[in-house]
Length: 556
Image (tube, rainbow, N blue to C red; front, top):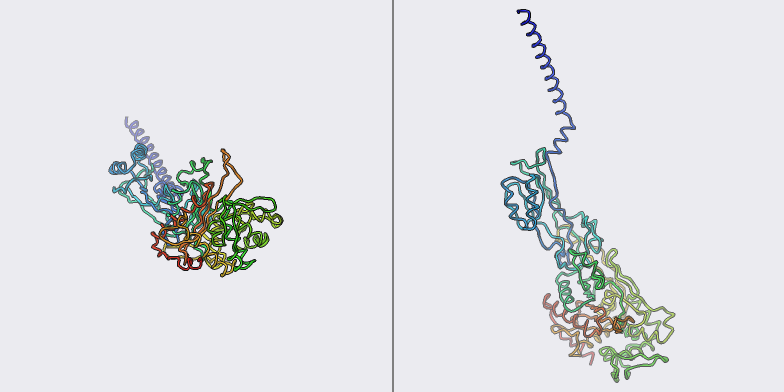
């Protein structure tokens, strides 16, 4: 019995010793595994989670450092779910999204969501971040829009994409999670904010004028464009195309084949009609002499025969005897046809080129205004072609930007400015790093443009029934009704209505060009738009109206 007991004891001791050795080996192996770099890195990756709450682009400013984008705020909320914060999060979420957010809360994993307000709760962090676009985004055709990756597709968003994408504000939140990627209560996440959110690009637009143009144009134009230009430096203060579109509903804009709202009509070429009579008058005064042109008399009988081809005046009964001032005011086609024949096609063409017709204009990067089309020198050997050219018909086309540029040369003493859209950049939303100024060139003489300026002021201010005459300020300008040679389904010819002008008349501060696409007579479709804009700008900016005394005296 004693031998049996001793045998059992020896076996038990051996088994225990073996188990102790095995356990020691296992502990050693686990120590090596736990101490390994691979496991340490894996554990660290599993224990921390970083996500981006906001990754904004740089801003786009107007000339007064007022933002043109990101003008409205929204709440982005980072949530680390706990039983105590779930209801407060749900209360701040739109009703239609609460079921989806409730499912996220049940997982216990952190997430970011849109909320209607800031959420005050433990392990919940709300941030007010800008909404890039609004429903009625201002200057949409110039600013452009982004694709689904947040990259610029058109406009300034595209041309300044690298600058804007690298200068916005980024907000990140890093939290410590358990192995299941769930919130660990009591460990506060870390919030990191990079960038000030104030850097961006500065445009020449004036937001106040841009919004006036958009408001007036949307009421008074079905299709068309408006350009407001500083005549002394070429900076574009406003540019709008109608109809507009919303960058929040691009699918609707793309599908609207009838209106094509995504076209920027301010940059496209159109038949210009009688706005070109300004060029004809300038060419004639340069070639034939100012005194001759100003004293030239002609009796309009409603039509003129040019080597067998009859050109009719818009007033079929005729205007009777006119001088140059009255011919400009009445926009008499036969009067200017005769003047053009005396001046010659070559000189008309040269003067048109001098004031920029046929020359495309790079506003910034690939944002380019069409230079339109000019008749060839060979075609102008025919008297009928010169007749058409004299009052802006035939092969001649130009963009609204070009017509505004031509008008600016009349206002500023004959200098041809280069229309521009970008002033420079800013790092802080207050100071400007200016771009190089564009170069202007002398296109017309100061004496001729001074006479044209007075003549255009007379055309507007001497007619009480003029559709272009503002109520609050004096102005000058020219209407046009341009034939297109295209017809609607009922056989009516489509005509472009134009007005280009300036205000105040004595010391102009702004040039405004209005295109009413396919809307007929310029004096009823485009001129009233100009008058409404001039009055609204005077009210908004507090401009003092002059009385136009000098223009009236010279006209008399």
